[in-house]
Image (cartoon, rainbow, N blue to C red):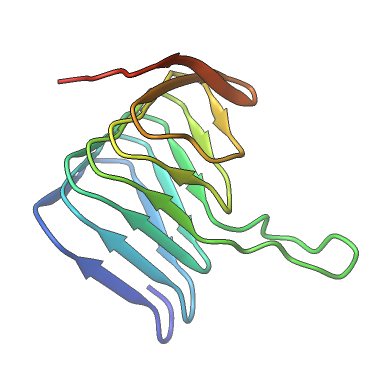
Amino acid sequence: MRKNSNLVLNGDFAIYTGCSIVVQSNATLTLGSGYINNDAKVKCYNSITIGHNVVISEGVVIRDSDNHHINGVMNQNPINIGNNVWIGLNVTILNGVSIGEGAVIAAGSVVVSDVPAYTLVAGCPAKVKKTNVMWH
């Protein structure tokens, strides 16, 4: 936690061993309920919001910043993860992405664009593979 950073906890959220969570100055990380499994990395430079009943598997990386300048501009855009989302093993979620309610992100995917609600996405970059999915 850096100067003027915020961690907002809106439910019961577990964070397992080996995780690295950084909230930079003037940034806000909001957690609903669920868990982040082992060895995940969350780097919040702007705003990351994680909803309720969210499962984040091992080795996941969530970053709301490119963390470097390209042509004098550093991309830092909020990430929003909806309720009831399942994020698979070793997924990377990059800045500016919204993941809709009930979505499933397949293992190893790289998410660089919005994910509609109740869809399964996979690949690099992640693309919709199935719609109307429900997971338990």
